[in-house]
Length: 370
Image (cartoon, rainbow, N blue to C red; front, side):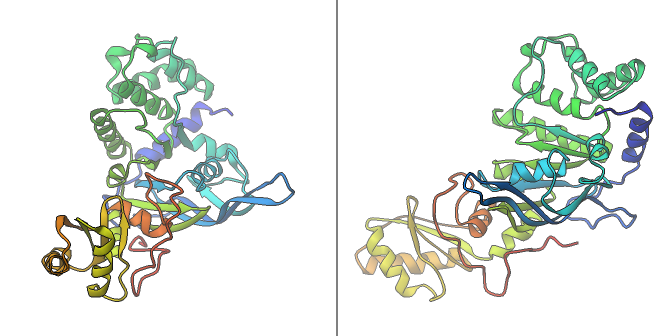
């Protein structure tokens, strides 16, 4: 793969001219508004017994230019395969996708020139300096020496690593290394930057600093950020979220809209006898509400959960069950994830059945269409 200096200059000029929408805003009216568009995307692999295993099953996906998009799913859901397809590192079995205006099947070289990919595991050479890592990467993209040097200086300034340019990579902190890796992917001014678990292994402070850096990149350059993460609090930083499970897209939308679609508060009770308490609560709870017991106690979803707590506690007391703790919380992204996949993102494969969708709502698309 080779990127000519002229192509890089044109891509960068196009990128800098791209308007950056704010969270929850409508896509810009000027075409093309989409950074990524996929329809009916399928990827199958032959199994050992001659059968086909579908890693991605008819996926439809739209990502708008300039937005920060989170891609969530349990292990084995098809996240990595989807990203490989969108980066033109694998060919789709069926369907089609365009990324940064290029078709992944017919123009994979153009797709690769227009995207950046931050892998979960470091690809930096620890025995080279910060500057050398960037310069060599720029030359591999076909940049001429002068242009490679100027781009290296630019991205070092963006990453606030200019004073460490001669330091060996092995001497950098974890947060500095991730900033350097992101900066390396910005050398060729990609229209779309894919980030696979960008904060894995970082402490909370370094994670927060890295997200500040990503927000600054988007505001400064108009980059489209496509992020996978197991940290649901990080997904709150994104404009929209898509959840994939068993190769299918099961939900997408803005974080607040996805949580609002769950609707009801989660009421949790810890009692002296959770088995008995569950039977009692089942009798007084609305008939369409599931009362569940787990390590946290017993819980159910009801509207205005805080108003239900006194009634539940009083009823349990009359049945000789003491309530040790009670809480009512609005839906979280983990609740959204559980609602659509039947498990928490932190405990994949738990085997719990998915909750039925709230009355009058579907589980395919909630509040995200624009």
